[in-house]
Length: 235
Image (cartoon, rainbow, N blue to C red):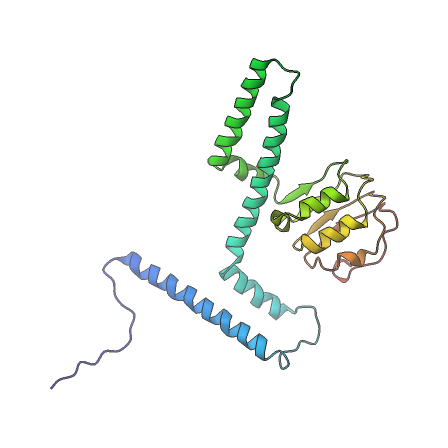
């Protein structure tokens, strides 16, 4: 009686593409297993792993950044950019469509302009040319108008797409927004990096209201009524 001994080894494929496909699959499985191990350790060993300060150190930043770059960050960044771009195309298309359908125009001209707008935005969206252009020229930026107030900010922040924005800007001297807008933004646009509310005299609050915006790097609020206080990561 004879026995054939077989050891575990990397298979040799006739087709080269099968080799790298298997390697990618093994890498993804390994990352998933590693993330579960880390989650288990954090969940059951939080007392032993208690940090001395709430501010992340360099090692923590590198570890989290590496894990993000290998898992969700590339897909999340692309998804956020596409959400903002598609919303921008929709807003621009609705504005141009209202302009084309004005009642003071002749019927034929109104029909021609409406068809042109629908064709332009329809083809541009289907081919992804318009969203790509907006994503390149207006990277995840929301600009409110001078007539927008707290209700408009609340409506915007109530959308899922609002979390994808990095820049929010109010026109210089907006008189309609108050601390309620700042409060709403701080609790819903959590990845915001730039907030411009210059000369919005109706904003009277402690700047610590924005403490939940841990990614905020630039806060322009000169001339904002009685805005006061400071934030440790904006010092």
